[in-house]
Length: 320
Image: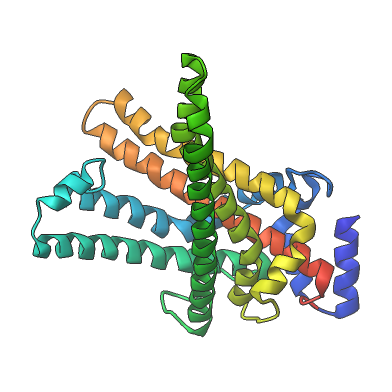
């Protein structure tokens, strides 16, 4: 039925772009029903399975630059990214600290550059049929506008996290002021339970809520980011939040799935490394880490492109 409707729309509007979208998304539209909360997850996986070569071609520079850059940084500055980083910084001179920060900034800028190019390229490949990396390595007007919108979304996320932080501080204050003094009269086990809730429980809950909040905000607002990637300016951030409201349940489910996967993924490289002898352990561990980064980035961005396609169909026919 959906294939037929796409062909009819293509015939009425005389445009080849809808046919291109149908080709790119392919079987993904038949994976889950429209009422399924897992629709974004299942259809994103279907798109990834349908176009593995193009997606790997787009995201390989991003994944390799991140893993290789981090490995080189850790070898030049051992321990800086570990748990004893604060102690190591306290022993450094100002010049050494600036050198470390400059090297870290270089690694992050290079990886972000390849991420920006891959994200923009993926959206244009899936929605316009543009060949991957056909825009080359240059940063044109579309890339700059894409970057500015990323900055806007980042600032909104930081403000939301700041608000969540104030709420967590408020909950901790209420706990310390009103609940713990009263809990002193309880049996020993009850006090220990409340202390765990106040420390580890509150910290875990805040981290989980922060991850979920970031996922929801980024997914819903990034619909406007896709609009910029396509060279259009039809959706602002406020409009993006409004048009994705009917999909909020599926967005929450996707954010939970992506968040859990993102937490479990970093455990893979150390596990693989512990099972292999040197020096193969380092090479295999870096390969696994790069593959995981590639898959997660493509998974998240594919869901954003899919969400854009769905909400744009509901609001206006920009593909006509």
